[in-house]
Every structure is written in structure tokens, then in C-alpha cells.
Image 1 (cartoon, rainbow, N blue to C red):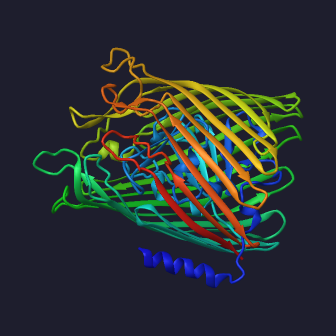
Image 2 (image 1 turned 60 degrees about the horizontal axis):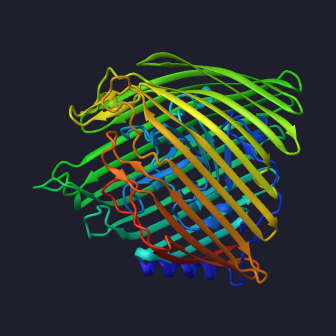
Image 3 (image 1 turned 180 degrees about the horizontal axis):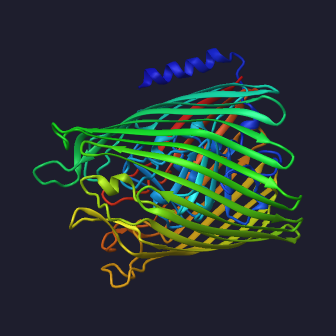
Length: 615
């Protein structure tokens, strides 16, 4: 492990004898261009032109947080909480506004990457390393009108790195952890192309809170994207990603079958990609393409004996997004898609299809934006589903902006939930209705920003696992509602302050059910992140993130409590010349002990240091 890290560090030195930091990569930025969202309509749209709640984190902020763990960056987003089953590499679920982690649609460079073979069809954020991500965009709340199934709780798009030249970084720290990345790319008038490779290796710690055997994780991944302009209006695009990882896990060994140390392994292979074309005319914009996403997981070890278990899930998607402007104020966003799903394990080999079309009419004036739309999905197994949505925004003057939205979401049962050994072919799709109203002042990248959001989401036909019968079933109704507060300030060019806070109330509303009136499990009632970044007169940058998470319950019966916790991270970075930056951090400074999943360990105090260079 140490030898790998030394080799990576040596490569940095060879790559740039006069190495120095690129000052564009630090968190203290000058004013940036108006933020753009793609999750609202599927095409580029100014955040100011939608009434939906959208948050964006750019590369300088990702790099300022440091490290490979993207979850440490995501907790800066409002409404987000994280659950992890142990050390790095363990399943990491992201919940938005109290929705299940499987109800968040995740895109990487516009490609749907939710694991078709996973029981709930969610995305495991442990398998995406922060060093390959350039931009994070999160739309909070249902948006199935544009994106269809899986977008019940929100939509997140991760954009991979693209540089002009070469960029590399390496770090080493606690648990014998090494992490290295290398990015290269070219940007010209007609061509943008880039490729990022990364390698991560850690000894970790015991996943089982009762264990003492380290559970390590190793992964390497490669991601690239490019665009070639045939002329000023028409371009060809392509992107791809591959990740290969091995995770050591704990299990339930004989004779007691209680969660404890085992030698179990999970090997995961992911690849995704897309080819397409885009046309941007005076009144018509089109983006079409063909995308694939595939995940294979192999489980071996003590818990599986002579019967290793493997799952394979694949999604192919042909899609078209478009916008037609009738006038300067009136236009329509439209699209169509055809999806092919496939699931395979030792006992099943199943597939299905989904065909959809949507339209959303919008009207925009200098101070007012209104939009409303509908979608129809025709599923091979479940027939037709209609979803509707509407949103609007009003500029009140003096930097104030009022926005509101209504969105519907639906999620079809996964092929695992239908056809695996635990499946039930009579399951119905999950549905949700979400309401959101908010007021904002200023810009997230400006000298001052404040936002207040109120939201509610009602869900029906939620799918859960019946431990008594060992089968999936529709459990009934649930509600999640709450408040989000965002604050940001830049008193001067050297200081940045930020705070996000979420107050969440959840309830199982299944009439006559065993858990009626209970809190939904693993949904903390409070979540706060406070951030400070300061650049000293000598160039040394110092920062801290304080994370406070409230109490929750691990189970639907509300019998197992997960206590709230507070963690503090400290970080520093120092530019050496113009291209090289040295950095270091301490995570969980006060060694807080906590669990986000009952019985699973979390990391204690840990220190890391490294270097970053750009040519």
C-alpha cells in the first residue's frame, strides 16, 4: 500500500518539476457565470428559470472538502442525509427529504446508473470517487415528468472531470489509505475531450461494531467524456465510465448467526456510457442519444460457502430531449425514451421494457416563470402511468425570489423484487406527490445568499421487505415534510461562510397497519452542516465542516434508536508556486462514536495529507 502511494507521489514530482497549484482550483472563486441546471428539463436551463429547488456544487468546493469520499461533499446539500454500512466502500445510501435512497434517480454525465440488479434499484455512492467528479447537481423532490421511474425523491446528476492539460493528486492517511488520481484533456474551438483515472486502497476497520478484524476496500475507475462540434449548431458527444472494486465484508457466521467478523467479499464491476448528438438552433434545441449502464456483483466467502451469489443488472436507453420556442416567452420542452431492463442471478433471468413520452409548456417573462407538464409511461408489466408537474418563480425585487413547485413521482418494482427468491409478481408501482414553496435572496455564488424552503411529500404503495414471510410487499402510505434553510456569505474575497439545515418529520400513515404513526426508519429529524473557509494573507487556506445529525430509528417498529451525533472536520491547504498545492485534513476531530445503520461501525478520528498538481 505504502509503495503504491510513494510511486504515485513520485509521478507527481516527475510530471511537474516546477509544480504549483492552479489557483482556479481553490474554493475562493471570483463571481461565476449564472448557474445552469440539466435536471429540471433534461436540457440546459438557468436555475433562475425554474421554480424547482435545485442545488449545485462545483469543482473548487469538491476539492476544498478533500478526499475520495463523495458523501462528505453531499452532506453540504440541503435535505440530504447519509447511511453507510461500515467503512469506506460499504453501501452508502443518500436520502433526500426523507425519501428512501432507492427513490433518488442518479445520473453520471446524463446516464441513468441506478443498479437494476439491486433489491431496491438504488445507486451505491461508495462506488463513485470524488476525484472523478467535477460538478454535483441535485433537484430535491419528485420529477418523474421529465425523468420517469425512480425520480420519486429527487434527481442527482454527477458530471465527471474534464481538464485542459494534466492534473494529478495523491494522498495518504489513516487506515493505511492511499488515493491517487490523474486527469488529462484537451480543449479547442471544436473539441473538448478528457479522461480521469483513479485508484483507492484502504485497510479500513471492522464493519461489525462487535468485531475487530479490518474490512478493506480497493477500487480503480476510469471516466471520460468528449464533445466535437461539427458546426456552430451541431455537436457529437460521448462519455463512458468503468469501475472495479473489491470490498471485505462482515456477515452472520454459524453457529449463532449474529452479525460478526467474517471473511466475506463483494466484487463489483460497473460500466456506463452514452453516445449522442446535440443541436442548438435559434428556436429549436435537441439532445438525443443511446446509453447503457451495467452492474455486476459477486458475493463470496464464509457466509456463502460453496454457493457464491452473483447478480447482473443492465439498462439500455434510447432518448430524445427537445425544446421548441414559439416566441421569446413561450416554449415547450418535450421528450421520448425507450428503456430495456435486464436482471440475472442464480435463479432468475428476467427483462422488461418501458416506453415514455413527455411535454412541458413554459412561459417566461422578466420577473415571472411558469411551467406545467405531463408524462405517459407504458411499462411492459404494469401498463400505463400518467404523472404531472408544475412550477413557477416570481422575482420580487431587491434580489428576492419566490418559487413553488408540485411534482409527481412513480417507481416500478425492480425485477429483483418481482422475480427473485423473495419476489412477488403482484407488487404495484410506488407513487408520490410532492409540494414545495420557497423564498430566496441573492445568489449561492454571490456575497450573500439565504433561502427558506417548505416541503411535503405523500407516498403510496411503498415497497418493503416482510421479515416474517421473507417476501417483498406494498406497505401502504407515508408522509415526509419539513423545512430547509440555506445561508451563505462572503464578507470578503478571502472568507466564505455557509450553513444548511433541514428539519424533517416523517410518518407511516398506513391505515390499520402495525407501524401506523411511527417515524420512517433512518430518517434523522435534524441535519445541519456549517462550513467556514478562510484564505490567510500568506496563502494558507484553512477550513472546517461541522456536521450535526439528530436522532432516528433503525427499524420501522421504532424499537432500535440511532442516537444523534456531531462531527468536526478540519482541513488546510498551501499553494507552493503556481501549480502545486499541499493539503491535509483531520476527519471526525473529536472521535465521535455513532452509527447510521445499527450494528455497523463508523470511522473515528483520522488524518490525511497529500499534494495536487496541474500542468
